[in-house]
Image 1 (spheres, one colour):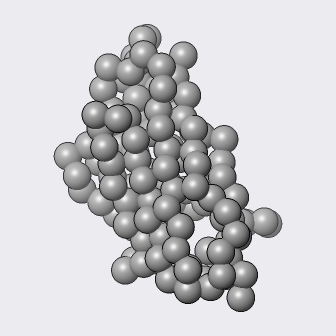
Image 2 (cartoon, helix red, strand yellow):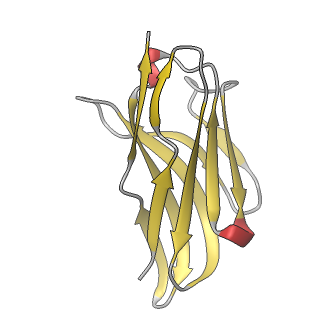
Length: 119
């Protein structure tokens, strides 16, 4: 069984920075695309940033130039560096990954980590 565990969320003032980490564990043979989503109260979950296994990235327009996604496949880890944070970035952030594990490809989600940006 595979599992994604996020860390790095917290409370930060507007203009500050946070770095989220997500580690995949279990019997994993290969990593596919990895990404970060977020869900604010009363809103739908949305893609924040994604990264294909060959390195191609895509970002939500609202975070372009402020957030950077990266990955370290040797450690089964994906990161999200968040700079110049705004109150509207407040949300629960979820890690998502396509993992090739025992039984085939799995679309895995983390449990979420809260990011709160105060004005």
